[in-house]
Length: 286
Image (cartoon, rainbow, N blue to C red; front, side, top):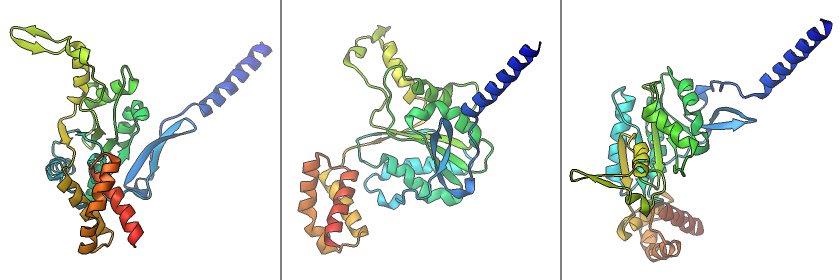
């Protein structure tokens, strides 16, 4: 009997040690410490890490995307006013301002209670925990998933799909998901999948593989598309940033040809390339 008691005592000690090693529920952060947070794991324990210096880009800095800006701005203001609003999927050409637009919304509306939580694709399985953590808070939270794409059968794909529209548990009214992707349907698409389409009474019905890929993107109520910039639009963005960096109109005009050569070498006339050129050019002439 004494041996049994000793064995039980050792078992209890072992369980206590395992409890210390296993990740517990995420602790609530100091909500007053920041307006943006990163969902991160440290030693296996998840939690919200305050972002002490969030990106300072403004809505006014995003040029030649006025329609996209107006649509997501309207949706965000509805959300802040406690009215109905949609989860948003921003897709299209790289470097055209998709993620910058989400960051600019935070700077525009942080004083009205908007907060941003950035979640990496690898951590999407934790979305229910994040939602539970912020439920009941007075702030309005955007869960931001940047540069999102999935391969076949990734578990994070189903986790996001469930939180968006497929779970028994409803997402609280103070949470929206904004995601950016270069892929319209967030997953790779193959030519042979189109061969699976079938015709029924004159109507075309996509195959199961296509249906599965479309089903995730359709759970976002608002789709906003971004397109490559023309040469004039690219140069307008270059001029905006050079002016922001302190160059006068003559110096901006003189930089035109160099800006075009920069874009040619990079193989892209995107807003990101324009900003990178402006930083380089202004840095050399300060």
